[in-house]
Length: 443
Image 1 (cartoon, rainbow, N blue to C red):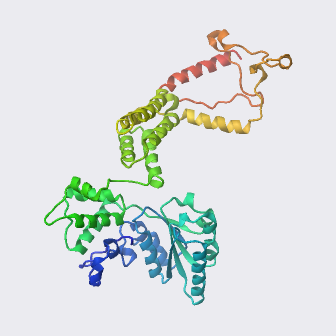
Image 2: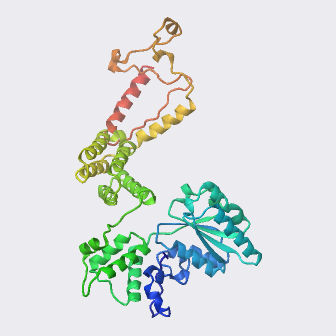
Image 3: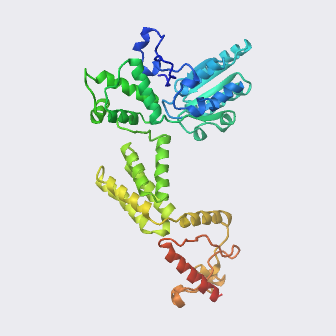
């Protein structure tokens, strides 16, 4: 299905001058733009000072990767680029194409080039090509046979070859905001010559259901028109019953999943319980696995709170177990409790930082033996070698502290854990300072 646009106000509807047969085509197809300036929601790319507008103005169009969610105009913009740069347009999909079809496309592009015309090759879902298939684009990109424009909903850094990325510029397509989606709805009403039979609240819900997808908002609008009877107006609740869709949703295997868990983690780390609850609710509403969220809360407890509130780990782990025991929806409240506890707890990454520093030291000094005085001597030979000699049993020492050095002799004493003056770690700091003073006094 075509991508979307909002035509400029010209005093006529976007369908003006088109064949009457167009009325039977889907709205998204009838609202296809005729120029880059008509694309809605991507002004940073297609506006007067947008990246693509500047490329066209400069007469230099290199290979590109369009990265963004569905329904944001990637396919349409590629077609318009070909038209505005007088390039032949070829489109393939990585879902249905293999090596044989790629070879045919490349040969056709080479033949076209001998007649003085370059080809813009648009590859939809380019991330679905394997590494070898992606590499096959490199020669035709380098010799100018094609200008490659790949479209992907996945993060190119993870899904595309470094060699391909080094030869292409990544342009980000943004989800359409509420204003852009409302403009599309208004343009659809102009094309249809009738208003959507929705209350104002229901219109806002319709836009939220689209979740930044322009194609989706037009499809939903068509569903509403088909369902509505004469003089019938739907409220928000009826709308959701009719279209059988919740808002918003995201694909748990794609970027929406990682974006929301990242937002939840940042809100907890930033001690904002309200924002943390909001992202938790969004993930649960979108169908995210609650036990996955529980595991991430446990990770937050040890990474961002640690020893500042040792109870945080117990609370997070208990919430995960409580959900496992109660199930949905009752167990979701336990996750919410843990989320608020973590967000309101004192924060410290001292344990996280200390662990990483200790791991680096372990990799660097992993071959050094521990000092002999702290090793057991179960045999006469080992005792004769000095194992255990000079070891002081801490419980027998004043303050139950011997002050011995436990690091390998060749390594010297190290400091990894540096607790801040926050939460429970304030008490831990006092203990460490006390032991450091005793260690200095006892040499």
